[in-house]
Image (cartoon, rainbow, N blue to C red; front, side):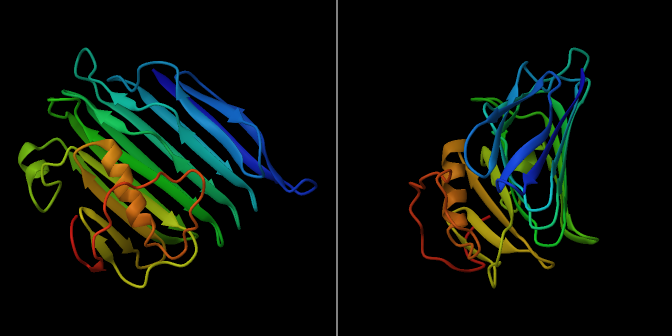
Length: 266
């Protein structure tokens, strides 16, 4: 199955609200707009069990100058093997114009046994653009070893690269290594290009906040389940000086440990 969904948001100067100028779904990638507020809100829903081996899914999101968009997932993505071992792929392309804001917050991706999945996120930011994007990877279902997964994240501002990161999952020895995933079931990460960045890296109990050399910040958390991983990301987010908590932020029940520069894991 091949599918390409497209979403374009633009600022309406007369009302000061963000309008959706293009909303093109293609099964299984279904986009549902939500009314209300100056920020446009859209839910991304999978109308079929995907990605299945052999699937090629693409999502393109464009946010025009001064516009504000929040695109959030509704249900977890389940990466499944194909009948003949075919790989699957998902590519997300984000374009955020001058002084625009985009929050792209998909639900977790579960990498099931024997799956072979590749996920790529490319974000292109203009001057003054703000971006928040998250990725939560669940390594297999309950009592299941994960299949193979390769994720690539490329974030640029103008011609300047902010983040180029590639992660490979599926090697049992590497996944169990203390220098890699330390045997944890869930890896959560978040990229924030959102106002001021931390002056230096800080960390706590299995979470870290790392400012990027050319701007932006990478937040990372390891946990035994997705709920705790999200809570630890929320703890890490509180240590980002540019972030203003909103109504969509989860309440973090994880105890916030004493923080020091470059302390703790991961």
